[in-house]
Image (tube, rainbow, N blue to C red; front, side, top):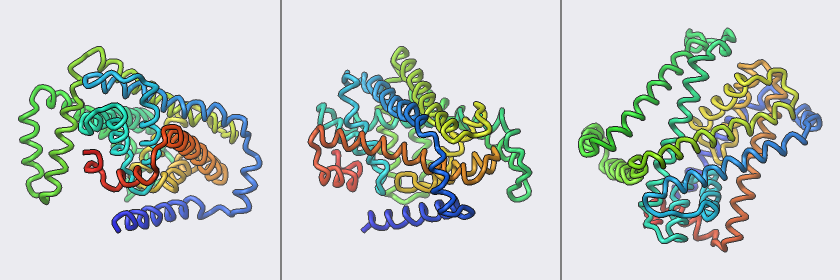
Amino acid sequence: MMNYKQLFIGVAIAAAALGYTLWNVSMADLLASFKTVKYGYIAPAIVFVVLSYLIRAWRWRQLLLPVKDIESHKLYSPLMVGFMGNILPARAGEFLRAYLLGKKHNLTFSSAFASIVVERLFDLLALFILFGWVFLFHAEVFETGATVSGVALSDLASIFGRLAVGVVGFLLLFIYMMIHQRARVIRWILWLITPLPKKWHDKVEYLIEEFSLGLKVARQPAVLARVALYTVFVWAAIVLSYYPFYWAFSLEDKSAGSLMVLVVTVCVLITAVPTPAFLGSFNAGVLIALHEVMHEAEITAVSFGMVAWGVNFLVLFALGMYFIVHDHYSVRALIEVEEKGPSGGE
């Protein structure tokens, strides 16, 4: 029943976001715009998307080293099936990844999941560094004259940039304290969540324990350095995967600044407005970045969003389905694991 409710809410949000994206665009104009796309440029975009997942597997191997050394090519299957699980309504792909990894390589669910928790932390750090760089040092691109509650959009961008830098500093301090003052940090966190219901206490304690377990990698400087380097490569591949679309749609502004604004805006929207397969939220992010901020033609921004979303979705779905078939996974069993969440892996 809960999954149907999640599906309904997700679809409703996606429909609202798509409605916002398509509000001023006719279907005839949108279909006509697809005919002008230079589809040959999409091939390198696909290469960068696939490369980002390959590098994620290499990074995952480093995160798992304190527990077990698993060759990178053996991690592709749980990685891709798990990421495909994230596009479904339950959005429990991380649990699915941990379950498949543990089952295939004889690891406990906690050990596998702990590596994913720390992986997400590194991605979060990278994302907020991007936020800080774009909103703090390139706030001028948001000088469109638009205001939010009387505050100029460029001023809001600058404020958000400073907040992003602050979050990065806080996360780094939190990691340091968890390594050197773990018991004290846990006491502080449990005190802070005292007003919350008991079920939230259990969830928070579970995540703290998993995070603490995953931080074993931080005690090996060489491994930690490789994880940080692979994180840079992952996000470089993600950013570069958007750039071929600039040429496919013959955008006026092909600058690095425009590209970074696009990536950051899309990341903000798909995080703040979670929808199944990011449909709608991804498109709205592209429209805001390219049309509202960078002043590209609205029909071009909408078409760009549709094609870029379709390419990313099809690559992820195709790779996920390939490994499901290749490794003879039961789709029904995978759905059951997603529905159960952490309990499905224990």
